[in-house]
Image (cartoon, rainbow, N blue to C red; front, side, top):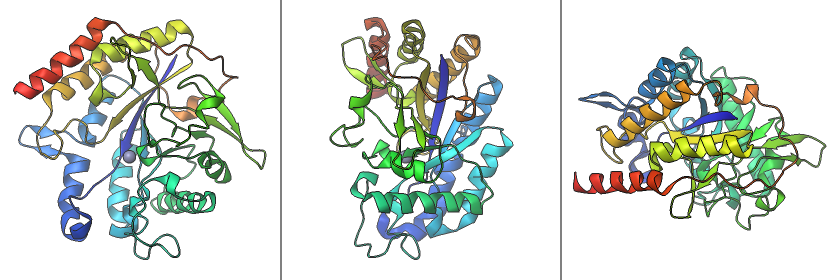
Length: 325
Ligand SMILES: [Zn+2]
């Protein structure tokens, strides 16, 4: 089982009304996450992966730079390159109307999700993202993930049109991910499949991995939202069932308490535990990039991995501790 340890890398300002004023502070928080206790943004994530000998995939959001210029994007990419980690494309169309000039003709107001855009507009937005990445020296990208997983049935064609080989935008438990769920019908829940585009190109569709938790609910495998034990058991079970890939999710800012500049100790410890687990299990559960991935084989409608009640109880205990803290 190959583990794709993915991180969505993005910068958000407090308010769309005061973007230019807020941006320098937002960039420092989201990218570096400096606190009196140390750095808990990208440098911390990169240092932890490196210390455990793990490969990460960083889906970098470049459209913010159409407003603020190339330099901040180049700094993000520089950090990832220096760490030897893989860079891929992430896109939040929230920036399309904030760009100077706006990225699409006749933009009227903000359209948050990629699935609000026509097939042609999606192709154009991906083109802008890839152009921004090229302009900071990033070439040969292989994979795409829509912001908030908010793809539509048109997204795989837009991905194919730009020659990208993989898409990781489908999330079976995110309601904003491909409304109508047309893509879900092509394979088992969260199972990879191949999309054949109209022009004959093929895209390997690698959805977000979901598992059944100890009380029977489907969850996606996100470091900030599951216990370390849930993630470990889900990966182990997926390997036993015969899954070939497992997509883990985190973000550049996930080690910080939301809206604050201090580390979330529970998530910091959990991230460390998950990395230590993957380092121990590196023969059975190697971390890989999209550069080490073949196109998925025909769907087998495999059952989703499941975890024990105890693993889920650990998450509830952590939530309770956080509430009491
Ligand atoms: Zn995102």
